[in-house]
Image (cartoon, rainbow, N blue to C red; front, side, top):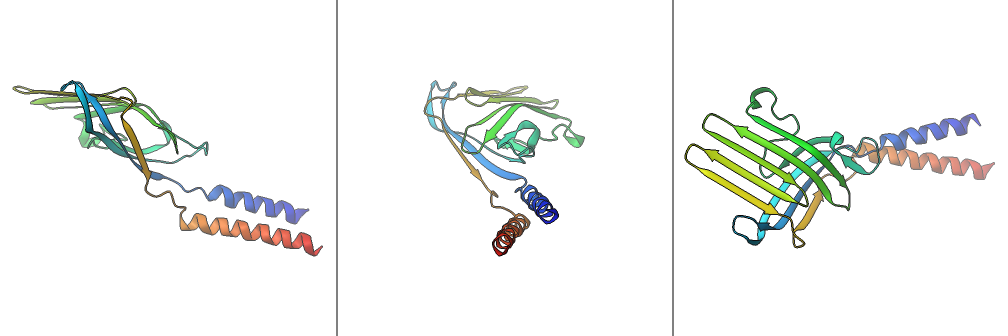
Length: 185
């Protein structure tokens, strides 16, 4: 009985330690209704990347599990406005991604100096807005999601780490030994 208890505890700890850890994803949305030109632009693109770790193992990468988030050439939203980045402020109000499902996020950022001000906000499935203002120049862009907007995402390191593979092999060997012992009794 004691051997079975020790074996079960060892297998459980190997399985728990075999989580893959943080995964990096690259994503893109292509094709939007352009509010400035008043027409659909199939080449309009919103793209970015994020690194997340499913810490609670529920299969959903949530805002609290983000380690990095960037899109449209922005700085990293995680840790923005810290240190020498005082002139750049950002926030992620909402974030969620389940592998095979849609990516949902809502983000804002602002950058300002004496000479200019830039603001941007994105709500997936709804709208992307960009505004630039300086003493003699104004630029605004707006993109709306449509039925024709296409989503693509790719996990860059979703392969289990070598340590995880070794733990899974130890677990499988433990199961084999337990099964062999049952048969020899």
